[in-house]
Image (cartoon, rainbow, N blue to C red; front, side):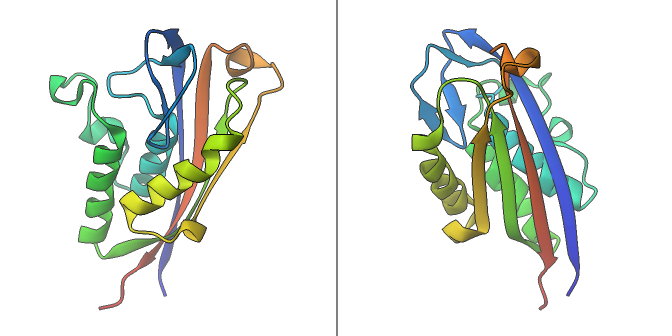
Length: 161
């Protein structure tokens, strides 16, 4: 069996008058993430990990912020496209491990729905994707609530035909 591993990272600034979307779930909060698309850092980190595992570059290559076509894009739609790229090369996701780093809001009530939403989009079982959350202990830009970041690791396995 051939396997590949990729890791991804994304960070976006928190601002007023934007929705906070993580893992495709809209979370009630007075601040949201600023970005060209919906700025879903969790989904972006997962996509970068998927692409990185196969040396396909990063999401900025496929969905550049300079292209108005992607303005306000739903990151779950982009995730479906990245997943299709992976499948077209005869690879599939074995599992995903991810971590969101945010001081606020508390994400515990949203962790399971995020994992379920991502699993549904990717055609995975719920136990193939782990979503965790932690704080930055008030250190750095994320700790000072200037932004939210996410890390992801994806293990791909080659599909044997």
